[in-house]
Amino acid sequence: MSYQAGCVARVQGLAGNAWRRRLALSCAALAVAIAWQPAMAQQPDRWVADETLARATLPAPSTGEVVSATLSCEAQRWSLVLDLGEDANAKSGSARISVGSQRYELDMRADGNLLTARLPREALEPLKNGSRLELAPAATSGEEAAPLVFSLRGSKLAITSAQERCSLRDMSAYQPVTFTPYSSYINLARTLRAADIAAFAQATASQPKLDVAMVELDDGRRVLFARLCGSSWYYGLSGCNITGFAPKPVGSAEGGEDDQAAEAAWQTVYDTENVLLYLDQNSLSHGWPDVVTLPAGTPGTGLVWRWDGWSYALKGELPEEADDFDPQALRQGRD
Image (cartoon, rainbow, N blue to C red; front, side):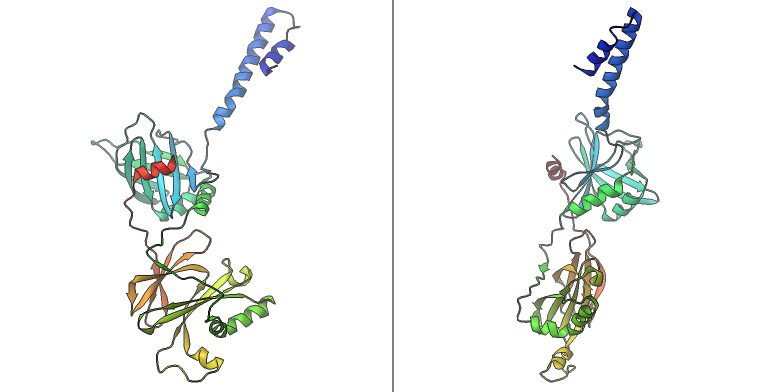
């Protein structure tokens, strides 16, 4: 028996047709209200992270009209997609988003009823920590379009979830540096890092894991990367440290065949926590390629390290890839 029918049955014994009709109508109204609640729950009032994809759904705007709005990430590129509805005829053009005092210009590309734009990476933190997002399309035909205003409630959790699920950027243009514990250079690396190994053992009462990668370059240049992994308490969140060694210039190293002589023949040229290492053979400084790094296992910004004549020094952030994105490809990924 349904809730409405049961409610009506319970009042059958009450005297008076008026009372009976009034209570029956109240039961019917209550049943309709209960049935209506799930439909209301389908309209989120905050940012919602997709359970499997690197995508977040925005809440309905407080001003302006769109069917839906999503922010997604693929290969560390972020895309904002607005669905204007089946009958809409979206038009490409510039737009501006504002979060607090921060402003970002967007190039909106139209594909049917969708408007898509690449979102600059530097806009993510303001979106995660702000309270209000305003998207203002460029004026057309002398008329300024009404802005869309979205709440940023829940944006930090949703965007962070998308960041964690986002795939790595395409690094096919760079040469990867691969570490292995099975190398003829493992004993040399153990000698060069003997002091670090001893310090770790003294602090943790255990031995770190040692991996190496030897990079052979032109004109006899080479870099031996030695990675020590162990306690995150000791090495930081990455749990590892990478140090790069290069042979000292001819004539500056002391002779001899013992461990001290071997150590004296090499100099430290690179030192960071654990990262994904690549070489950019298309960018040389003094004959040495740039070292490009990506965070290992966590989202973050790529960095470029450049040879300064003696060692690798931080040059700056890895620029975003040149991108002439295709809205149709993004639509296929969205569907």
